Length: 561
Image 1 (tube, rainbow, N blue to C red):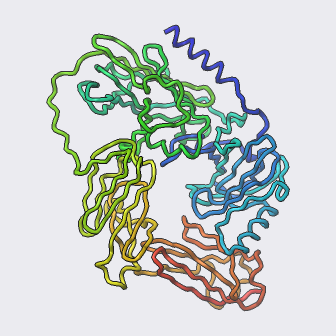
Image 2: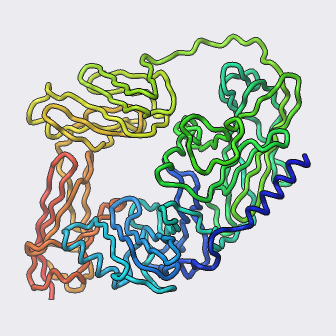
Image 3: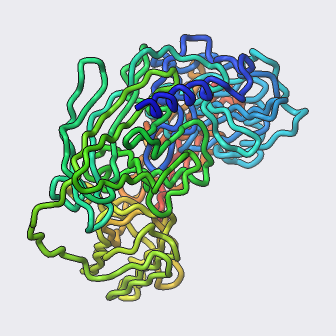
């Protein structure tokens, strides 16, 4: 064990030497930093690229530039980051502020001018260095809940000059954390048919034993051959109960390091490989993310380091060994897991024949499937592995395996709709079916003649769906023919029951107005400070269209001094 502890000491010494400038970037808020999300924690289809900072369940807190620089990018979208601001700094780093409520007045004016020019709420701008310079400690925005935010908070990032996100805490931004990481489950994975764990040749959950000092053991296991391990783990900071991600994971077999995952920086173009890093099947079936401490083909994550034999250990017959995992958060709090292993051949077990679906996929080739009126096209390298895929079409319902296989890219589903009546074809779309009641969920669908096609990154069940019902529009805070002089905003509720909202357009007296769409609340909001309605009598007209072209027009008259 001397080798192990020497390695730990050296790792801690190296870890303390930071190549990143300290005390250059400040806390972007003037409240105590409490996180709801940490850097690189595991999210759906991606690693989290920043810190999610709690805003005391409020919106409208001052957001300060982390350092001097200039606004180099502004993006406003309905989903994703919502209202987002990007600031380039003299040292080459870029700070990002997302899910904002609004921008500081000068920036807000700049954005609205672009929105009115393009007649679009969703815009993206790249100001030149001299257009929107910002000083250190300057208020540049106000915190919010825009885009795909699950609650009020500020998403804050620091990126390098290659657009790679880096943990902001590496720059000295401090979060109080004295808690050790936690482990909630451990799994063992025989690599092939020549390996076993407890007489099982497939994934095996191990019994986890928490120790009084905060570390963990498992019961001794009997195994033979090449074995990998996986863990379900999380970290918590002192001031929040959120289950956040780790900073570093290392494994050791009989004192020798075999694997490391270092969560300090990654590239956006690799982040989807998270689905290869975790046990994707368990995630889809149990909503639990098992981090596999071994490396399978296609997992090219740059966060992997010092991987020996792809992270697998080799258990020999008649040996006693120990596999250890060290989990560490950013503040150096660490937790150890020990797995005692006895090398022993498996007992003679008659295994049931494996039932295999009807079609075999070769991952390194183009794969095309066709049945009845449906075609499926998988580009080369859509999948990580060769496998048997279930494929069946019945009554316009496509059953394409189960959504338990990770994909690296989108594939295409095509339906031939020539047997449908002409008045039905325009209202058809391809939907994924989800939930107990198999409710259709719209997938972006294109039509060329009698062919409908859609691209998706998930397997599962799909079907043709038909939407003939137009969206609904309802005023929220006003009535037709009323005086609205005291209102600061106009608000309406819009909704579509099936294919979803595609676009909307609003005018006052024939002039386009900016209405902010909050899809979480199904509302459109107009700010009277935009000064479009300058006459006493005003005609408001709103047109909302769903994804298959059904449209609704709402008109009303209001008066305002």
